Image 1 (cartoon, rainbow, N blue to C red):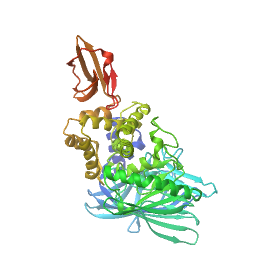
Image 2: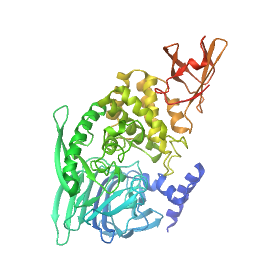
Image 3: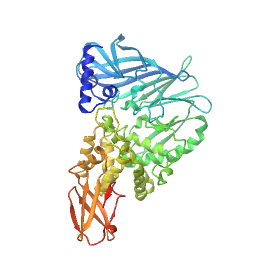
Image 4: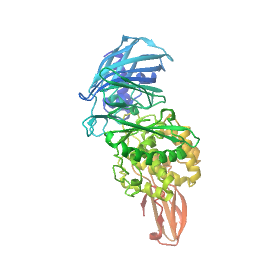
Length: 541
């Protein structure tokens, strides 16, 4: 390892350990070191041969990038179990060194700012196998009921470099991608975007896919099976037609036609009304049957809910409402807006993906079944929340925050809607947010600033309480001497938030902070009802 690489790793380690100790692997993947910030990825050209019998892959990824700062060294990432055959630029081999997943590529001459270059990484091996996809990432090698290969990959948490070489950090999306997959004859390979070509080779079938929009590295996907394909179209409010493509196992073809017709178009119409037109219009919308439950792969959504309503036939909320729609279709399509179009800059910003997408489920319920059912659905999330740790972890640590980012994050948004207390304005803010940040990579602070400006209220402390602290705010109240005394107990000192009470059959809206406040009240403590259906809070008498 060269002296320069040793110094670079020392920089990475010192940055991380100065914050909180994290291991070497996470420091290399999480930190934006100079060897990563020095270049911006423009395009991936991923070419793979997939061998289901040996559970192996072989091929290359050509990374086209633009230099941001003069450099002779850059970092790409690839799982150590995958062997690098060569790294080349202009057909000349480059020197490289590996530390965990990080591969440090060395150039003999300085690569100048603004110049555009490409490097080709040739590699092979057996990629990591997921123990429980999509939660534990990697490849899924299975067989269908006929004994034919059925292959998928999901890698949001573990990172895309678990199966192909890339710049594995959320802050940088390739602007476009070409995917070339060679699979055994008789099988179909499905990737993201549009299928532009199919070729029959001597001993394989080649499928070439192209993605014309920026895409998160973990959203790039591979699906291989004896698929049957059918198409449909969705007509938007402006009359434009969106291509709908479905890839399913042969025995599920007729079931899929009926099920997807029932679920997809009304969902797309609802989401168009709430968030705007489907954000990857030119690449089309696709559902691909997978040997795992689901994943939001951009333009090629992984679907494994077995054509059931609810979440694997169940209802996570306990309300029964979730079993009125196919959870995987609704939730994973929601990520086309929240996560795929609007993307977090770092894993610590993952709540932006999950909170808004989960909240979108409640808005979908409201779209079809009304506000009362939507509120009931949202309040059903409370039974799943753990309040185990903060939703936002240490930035640039390659760590995810609490899984509460889904349901607690969504209930935070439900709470903010009632803080605003103006539904027309709230829905416009959500719609405008989806449009103003469309196709952008953003950070937590930018989102908080946007909502504070649009809501015209001091809501940053509310966001911070739910996102940065383990406990939700507690509304404390008591009755003494014909007076109602009340305050918030919160970790954020400047915390201010309204609350709605029922007093003597009337709704009263109080603006409370962390200091005791008073209100004349001649009734009993037991007669006071707190509208916890509108605000996700704890109560202390």
